[in-house]
Amino acid sequence: MTRLGIATYNYEAGGYRDGTFDMRPLRQTFAALDVPPAIILFCEAKYYRRHQHEGLRLAERALTDALHAPYTGLLGVSQHGPIPPAIFYNASLVTHLVWPGDDPHDPDVFADKRNVGRFRVNTTGTEFGAWVAHFTSRSGTARLEEAKLIDRYGNDPLPFIGGGDLNSTASGGHLPQRDWQTANHHTRTHKGKRIDDGTTDGHWEADTDALDHLIGRWDPTTNRRLDGAGYHAAAELAWLANPDFTIAPTIIDKPGEGGPDLIDYLLVNNAMRPHVIPSSYHVHIPDGPPFPSDHHLVTAEIDI
Image (cartoon, rainbow, N blue to C red):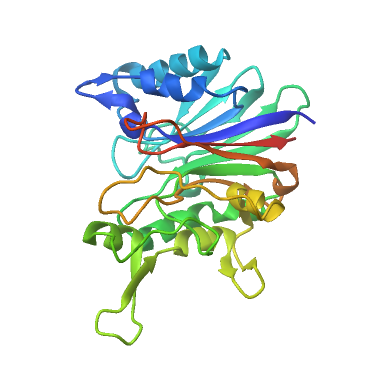
């Protein structure tokens, strides 16, 4: 087996500011890692398709310089505008076998195949799948539909790693919790769900339907998840292996949001779960403000 690092990172606006790309914060973030990841599930590749993929090439160069390893980017597609996710892979560790491309109008690509790739470990020849997703921030109902597009890979016999900015959390009191009483209307209506509890106003709580569809809903009586599509959160695997482990939020604390939350996930399917090293899971929280992005880098390792 070969140990591989996996990462997910939402680089705010892909570094695009005032008509140019600033990759210095991206370089700074990844330079802090001791081991170059094999796969980086990347969100907010804003305008990376323009000008012969200029942004993608600049991000490749920044990662290659920061990690002293050869990175190649695979740009994905988004239904939310020119801000798709991407996968960057370390060509010294893995070989890219399948990727559906970055044309959102390609009539030959099914919706559940978009942003889904297949890779081979260079040293062992073992193959695995990887997908990246950036769920909508606006609607829990829409996020659930996006989750249903990738649920099929949860029980796929091929080991899969997936993740990205899923813009929602899962059920379970062991996960970071917002204070929904102090969250503003925007955050409540985009990320939360109003519960009719018999009072005049009801109360708000996290809309966990999308993540719970993938990993199952948390049962506090048995301390395990029920149902689900066959996925497991690397953050939760770390906590299950060590109940003293504190699962950290993956976004910065912004005014009016009721506190930071865990919305950037690394998920593995049933076939990949035995390969995960739970203690390797880590949310990298840099010194700040200012922060290099409004999301934090998340990493874990697998033996495959």
